[in-house]
Every structure is written in C-alpha cells, then in structure tokens.
Length: 119
Image 1 (cartoon, helix red, strand yellow):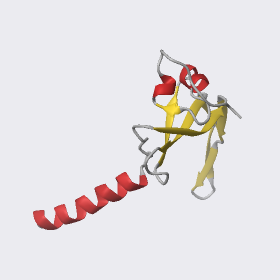
Image 2: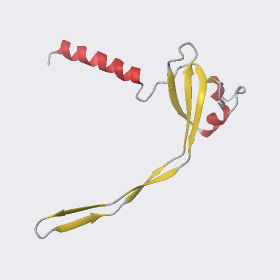
Image 3: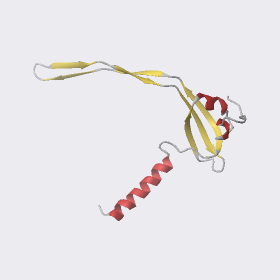
Image 4: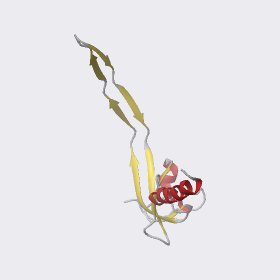
C-alpha cells in the first residue's frame, strides 16, 4: 500500500473511532444525566473437555473464577451539544458528590457542593 493511501484510510478510521467514542469520550463540561453503580461480582468460567484419538482420550480442564470489582459510572451530557454523551468511571466519593443534573466536573471537586438529586 502506498503512504498516501494508508493515510487516506487511517484518518477516516481514527475519526470514526473518536466519533464512536470507544470508550466514549466525556465532555469537558456537562451535566450528570445518569449514575450507575455495579456491585462487585464473580463470573464463573466453566471448564472444558477435549477428546481425540481412537479410542478417545479426553482431557478436562477445571473452571475458574473471574473477580470483577465494584464500579461507579456517571453519564455526562455536554452542555452545548445534547447529542454528545459520554460515560466516565469515578470513585465512590465523586459518585456520591455528583448527583443528577449536577455540573461536571465541578461536582466532583473537593471544594464546593453539588446541586441535583440522586433519584
């Protein structure tokens, strides 16, 4: 591939990824429009059995746990563009401070108070 062709493909791809926001970029200033808490949990991955040969010889591997930590996430909607919505993972302290309709990121700062309500 020629350098110009590679650039022509790379730029639209980069723009598409930023536009999709994988992970979604968070507006610099916005309003808290949703808050989600997920408790810590354990996912169990089952074991597998593989057989081969005649007569079959089977090998079994045991299952294993995946431990997922608790998460606090805020959805932020841009003040100037309501179509721009991003999600940010925060700690419990910021989650507790940034109530619905509070101004982001000011609501999570250590000084001042948050307006809004958790519903």
